[in-house]
Image (cartoon, rainbow, N blue to C red; front, top):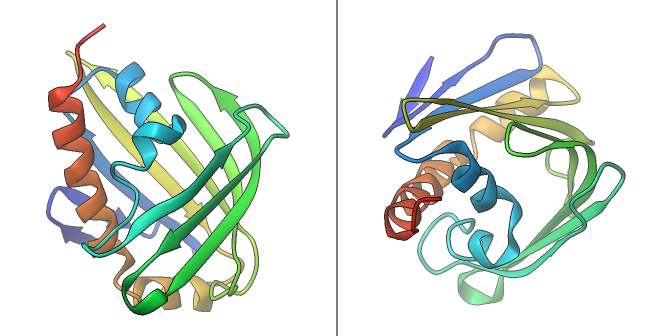
Length: 163
């Protein structure tokens, strides 16, 4: 088990990485943060100095998405994939492939949101093409970047009106 801030990562299978995080908001609002481009652009960019410049989403099973980040010194990083399952506000499953393909192929991501007493726990399970790809992803500092983004989600949720 790895812990970074409020984020907890486990490896339940040979190629799997499960990232668990709790948010002080109803799951409908948390789901919106993961699916609405205007909200994603406010948190999904990791370290300071980065921005989510392109955020195109066709939110339906079979729909595609495309993200492009801009970083310091003109760095550009892109990824995209296809939604396999969209069940608002409880589940998203998609394929993920980075343009530079540093993960060694397509990753399958499944985000499950569970609400209890107005708080939402997310479990984001990533299945990599191989154990080597998963372990390589972990060496990039991705968990730190994810927790930076999740901390921004905390602030974003605190500022959103409850439904």
